[in-house]
Image 1 (cartoon, rainbow, N blue to C red):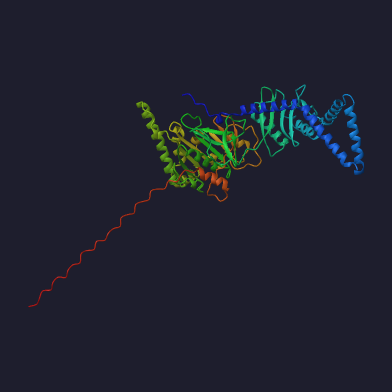
Image 2 (cartoon, rainbow, N blue to C red):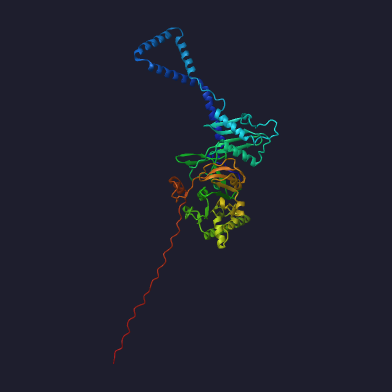
Length: 528
């Protein structure tokens, strides 16, 4: 089936925006070149007027009359001689052009401090990019650093962009070799910032750029997405080819999202999120739940038992919010049976040539927060591990419109079952983590350095075999938490579905006590 074109606001990528900026910059440069003589004359006239005003102010009051008489005589002489006004105008314009010329010396290269920084960086890279057998090494102690660094850019004395040329024999195809160079550049260029490394293996070049921090003030809201699309968070503008409008405070602008697509045609139907305590995995699950409730039903199983999802209890579309082991087992067992029922109903409809039943099309989301806690409790009580009940939804959920999202902490990652780790191809890593942890979860090392201070909801995402993207989850805190700001609390409350109150039980009929009729006293027979 042909895919309908997306709206313009959704399909606008970074390339058209970049071209528009280049056209605007080119037009501005052309206008500056055309109007440069006029700008120079205006600047010179303003400086001549300022000099004349200062001269008049410095002249004593007793000499100002004679000065005015001298100026008037000069003007009269100029006006009477042939071509006097024209010559005077040419003289004034020449003086203004000379006075208004740009006398700022053009910068031809780095200053002394920047040169020392580049030379130190060059010397530090010599052991990585040189071998003893090279007859003409590009990197050598005391060598020419400008040949290895043809392009560089500084801002406030700090390196923000660097192009590194390296010899062809460097093993840039090995992740370990690239990691060593990236770690060295990160340390020598200044910690506390995020760097992006782009390796050009064909051209033997490495481009290092400083990335701006991702915005942490985007709160939960209704995102412009199609059914089956979920916004996990936001990333860099040049990393994705799509933007969505977001509201941040009083302004609205387009932000690049990380879109996760689910449903029967999805290649990554299930998601696994890992992080440290306080990294924002619960906020990610709340954000996913609020978006899923627009078109589907949600079952939430919380293993921590802290009541992070109490705001969703009794809401429309929320089938269950379980915090105990018996309720979790019952909900997951029902989800497994529901998955099987949907598969059987859809298969029978296809065999009979009928459309798929409507009750199998509505998406069902199963969100689990720290399910390994229930595993320990189940083992202690001799019950079934809840992760075993996820085998059917994980293996057959894509065909039944059932999506599973699991959030766990790094220290319990080994307790996750093989089924969970195999079928969750969409991965998210949040919070502070070393590159080894990120690579073990996502399957690929990120091309950026981790930030020094990691806010909640900050991390990396990878959907299937796609690239590793920086990620900032929308702020979706628990509205019942006292430490939540009022703006974020109100944003979550506005997205909550209406509360569905359970029907009030009818009052039980009161038993009516029937009094036996009063018995009349038997007549006493008369004597005699």
